[in-house]
Image (cartoon, rainbow, N blue to C red):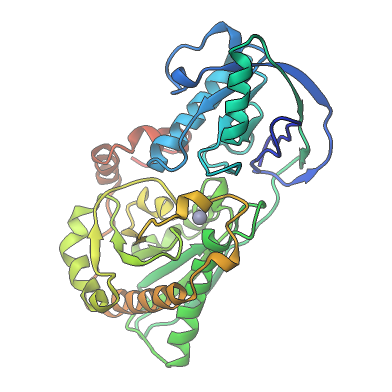
Length: 384
Ligand SMILES: [Zn+2]
């Protein structure tokens, strides 16, 4: 994880990122001017000269399609660092004075300090800027370890009668520090774990193995699932499907297919037992959003549980992602959906589809508009 910041008045506690271990501790305060480039903050447009040495205010909406958001944030951070800006202030799009913590795609170290500021604080700075130059005192409060910190994924198998093939039920267990990470993603970890417990309790032996995988490091760009894919390379052809859950425990709707229209017909059939739970729909849109990405880019049929958005993005990565806001009825419903889907996918005679070869992955990324983000996200990879 990287650069963390705390900003003294008028902006409150800052967010940030870790790719390495981090700990609180004063790094020394600096005073810098503030510049506002809200209108040009897209990562491509030329930057005005006043960003040099300044803390730069940018507007980026975290609840837009995450693919656009993370790419823009990444490109703009790089652009600002090249222009010698002192810091990037991302105006939080959360309600009230809530800040937004995140790190995706900026790993292992941000190119400059990136700090979330509440929208009221940004409005205050902007009002001051209409009267003349503004200087702000930045006091970065986090420090980082000198190297990567080891993490572990947790894996358990419900062995099938023909264990040559498997279905993965997955959720990430890491989260951000402002709150408990209850809905992102503790609740889904609980439902996958509970699905495992119930299937075992019922002494169910599916035709093929159901593997329950809990990833770490998702928040730092799917580090756990990428490591899993690298380490289990020999098994990737044997994975029938990966069913990931990372969108919160709101009402389930069905599964996202990440552009794999070739899986649509078979998936509808596999999901038909989930109709009474309202979770039999199929969505073909694609995004780089969570650990399913690590499997999608190597051609494995990768799904995620689609849910009603409700107020998920208002609380996502904030101080109010807390346990009391998780609806226990939804935990039960998700558990039932995951247990049933895991069983159906593992027990069916036919696989939902095959693993794509690299040229087909390339075509999929192109068709779904994810090629540019793929290149940012995997600068060294040559999958095709
Ligand atoms: Zn998550």
